[in-house]
Image 1 (spheres, one colour):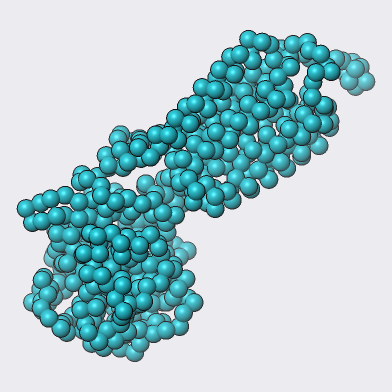
Image 2 (image 1 turned 120 degrees about the vertical axis):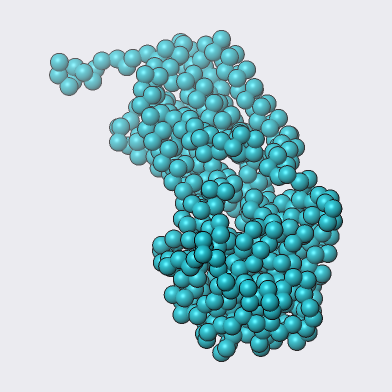
Length: 532
């Protein structure tokens, strides 16, 4: 058979295309534009689903790089599987596309809610993530082959041109979806409702293509079944939006022993405050991304040990990096001649520190003290952009178990800290537990030393945390001493002297430093704390 003979063969009929009056069909140009518009929307929704899974894992588990790797690797692999699986389905492209799109809208819209439930109630987050990412990837991968068949049925064109048109629109849609997720969906709706909104958009786009463009090519029973399915999916997603807030409150409470009295999801972190009554009084606890930051029963031990050794000596100009709850700042302001600048990333943490009655009572109004200057900024960037020097720098950052915080425990960061120290100034770094996470602890000391700082480790017992450690650092050999305006509840010179002694079962470790390009501290922190 010659090429001419082959080209003359009639096109196979599509089994879900009944004979219909051509005059009732939309024009080819309109139909083609509508289909490409749906490709654009579907691509945007698909990328948002991927980003939503990465973002949720970053909040719940930490380590954005690992979460992104799992989600993207699984989904890209599954998309290939989906493309292959769509080949035998091309004989019924409209019905198959409608079913896939409705399933994708339902699963994608409910994916964040389902994974949050798996994390809160079942402790099965990572296996559930892999399953959800795989199924979403298969459905997304099956879209393009079916849409390509429908595009060619509207108007035949060269295969290369058709692929170019399809993928150009697909990539532009992905761009728009990628930008909408952080700048529109998260600020307006948050993670739970944002995914549900995208699911509704996805369902609406698929329904528009099926019932608006190809309705004449479907049999009556097929239209009825798909119509019921579409209405059911949209109803389920709307119900999810109605109950999203109640679900989030219930699931969040399941993760905490004590009653939640305040909670905020910000672009930077998940903030939760709990409180219960104990024989020692109310126990107020602050959690950031699920990690305990303090208990009001014993937080004074942590903050006294963090602040006062560094304040021995000249301390008129003090910089606090982190500590948006205002508790470290409270200790600084016990010195009448001290003024402080606090740099905190999350404005919501500052707001809670000022307005939440529990935090304001604990920090004694330090954030509104006239001797305090509060700045909302990333500490790393702020140090790079400002040239002031300080007598004391207090580094009170969350633990380095996430990619976003690991950079604040790097040689580069401590070099910036050292550059802002006045001659003879001191810096103090909260460094985690030398007992539970010894590699992390001694890596922090090695990292500060690699930045040219001389360091002195010490540790104290904080019942809520266990054995907890710090590094006092400066351009000269630091000394553990106190220069107190009044006695403290916990720390005195005898306690501080004992704090420099480490037991035989937790001796100093010779660890390599952590850098921006090789964040060893992240690997150490995640591996050590995962045991507990």
